[in-house]
Length: 219
Image (cartoon, rainbow, N blue to C red):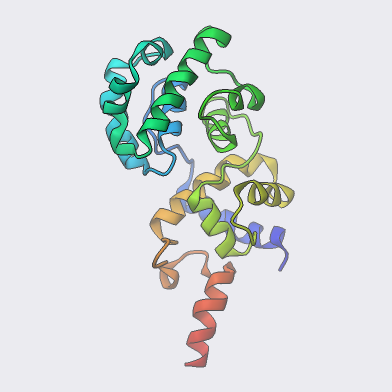
């Protein structure tokens, strides 16, 4: 089975299961989403939502974080982890938005990646969720794990994974693909103990075939 053939089996099942996907991060404006995604690095969406619920009561736009002291920012975001570096990034990012973009979040990959704390993954999330612009595929820990387990890629490098996925996944599905794998990773394909026996896509998954099915057949 080719990767495209495998995708054509897996994707409709996940599409039926999850329907229209939305980001798990809570936000009201493009700026709030940008800050939330920066904070989500090495942190759960649940924790980020807890933090931003309070943060966004006092932070409405880039001017608020640009003028806030680093110590004050750190106090608000401490529980997201790596808070010192994140505080510097979201403060600098906010200042860049004010200086270069009149306080608005830009809508191109190049401009977004020029902002402090914004890598390709963050830019892809913002472009897809806010403007439905498909420049690439978001590769977070869930997408990386599931793409390898299913048999779409054999790499731990997010940039390599993204390039490989873009070769056979139609562009119109790039946004949904990431969302579906993130949701499925939380529901069934858990990192430490995947629920293979009740997984909807097990018949088309290399991990199941290699690690579960063959062991059962031998026994």
